[in-house]
Image (cartoon, rainbow, N blue to C red; front, side, top):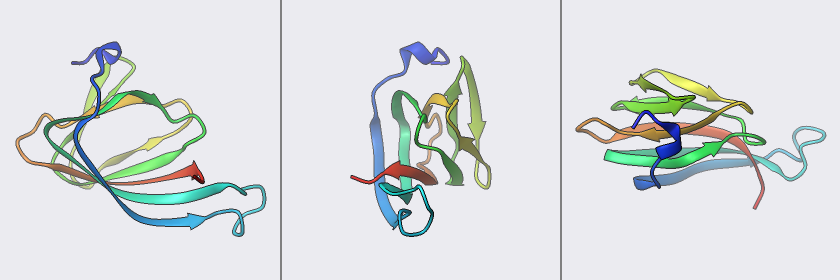
Length: 114
């Protein structure tokens, strides 16, 4: 599954919103944007896909439990607890849990307000 073009659809993923902050009143030029924090759980053999971009949606990820495999540019990289990664405008990836236990991450990003 290292081929990013074969990225499967999302399955076995639950997302729990934790907090949001309207950035418009906080920072000039950020009207219509919010800072969002979510708890994402990927079940064993679960996938957070398909291949997606973070253009206009920068973020950071921190792993709490398990191992998440991040597929970018044809390279699969495993991240375990205490380690995470940035998601900038150049990020095009998909994620999976190849392990036997649920993988849990905190995801923080800036998104357009719904």
